[in-house]
Image (tube, rainbow, N blue to C red; front, side):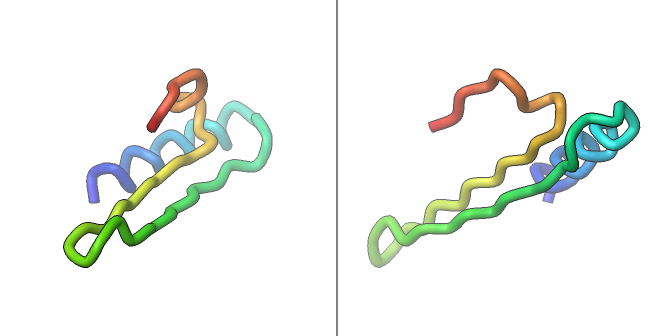
Length: 53
């Protein structure tokens, strides 16, 4: 939940700064029968220039 809260906060700051329309993307993928990968990205200003794997 904290990850989503941080993404929402970043988007709210983006709206205040009149940057392009913000969004949150949540992707899931099955790694194997016991593991799931969850990737969360946003277009808020705090996450720009950060490379994720």
